[in-house]
Length: 306
Image (cartoon, rainbow, N blue to C red; front, side):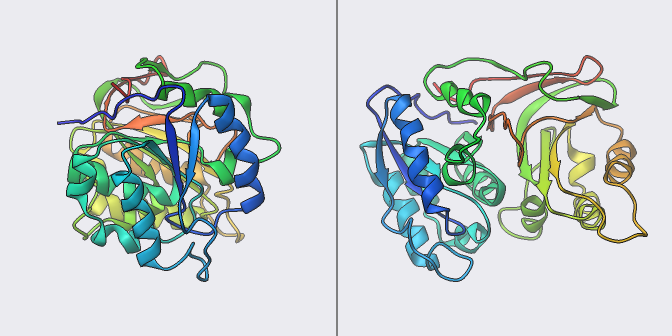
């Protein structure tokens, strides 16, 4: 049963954490003006400026920030500063009962996919796949439409994927409805064989990625296929595959790889959604009901807040 977090109100506090790689601090500082425009207060995690190789501090400290923000009664939403690497390292140490007892908005994407999957499947909490502060919103060329979709946190509204912002293409016709799940393909594949293995049964599955050659996308989709995850799905929402181009002369194109796996299972599917490592980046709640009309290229998603 999905557990929706309480919607935000002006004056609420937002907690900022870096559960993966070190965020760009200049971009992060710049993003605070946007949060000010939203009318919310900011509480910065204790370890947001930490660095430990490609991680934003050691596992214990990143985990402590996550726990602390969920426990803090003043904090109504937790927004990740950035992605990168490392959320899978803390997933098995998270106190999921603590999250279940203190449900609140949790927002991010990319490497945060592992946390979205683990938190939702362990607690039922609806989480949000959306652009992050240092990675996206704090950039000087941040897209206004990416920012606009934060408004869904303040009012329960049904989301329609906006027409005309990206070239959508029907891969497999038909209609499908189900709980929206998924996120970054690399991270979804990395859950296989763990206690947090992605559950795709009768669900609409979102996939996106960045900087992966077609052969790597092939490997990950094949892993999901062999694990029965593609066959289990109700349908597919193919997000942005940014810079997923061949680096060698002999290669399949990305579209050929996607076609191989998606058309094989023959479930309603549309590709070209501006969801992922792109600009604008349309944010969506995960764990709520969604409807896909593949022929009409329409996606409707239930509100993620109550």
